[in-house]
Length: 313
Image (cartoon, rainbow, N blue to C red):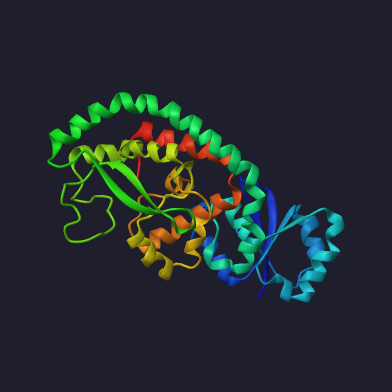
């Protein structure tokens, strides 16, 4: 059954009524962002016009299957003169959480929201900006790399840098360079995700990971055009093969060029499982749909704050 549900948010909406089904409500209830939202319910047989007047409703959020209910569609049509905004649940969800609910979208959502041609001008400008900022950041990087190299060499045996293959836009395989943060034979037993407190990580490596200084050599990948400064972080081919079979729409994150940092990285703690990758995908989809100059600047500023606070993933 459908319910009228009142929301008071500190986000894009002030007061809104949500028409929702159990699946969507359960999805929103998982989010910590929704923890402080009061949920007074209204009976579905109440007069919607009266509810709007009584509670000063300005936004109605509808569930994904609302078009199938002709009675509710007619009710929404009748309240058009009240100037109430009507949006679907995925849009409401992403405004509250900063991510797209994968469990509540389908192929049609991608056709409607991820039209690549609409971002042509932005992508062209971003390419120029990436090159300029990468050159700018390369100067201090060159200055501190010798000190980091000495620290790595003194801390443990092995090379200073290591190379990895990653899956880039449209499944292209690229090679990235990172400062070594693990013991030299870290993958002698095969490839596996790095845990947050992974015993393979060296003392210096732990500092480099916390401050994300291990990522600095990837500025070379930005200069080459393999990476952008901001975008979904590229994964290793071995992990991609697993994730694309376990997670719906996982390949959609490959629609754009991967980044040195990303919206998922500044919003989600360190992840090392299929479940964590699902969560990060939802943030990646939000970025792909909403990517803009403002969102890129916001992501870079959040990354800088993480580096300064030594709270990196």
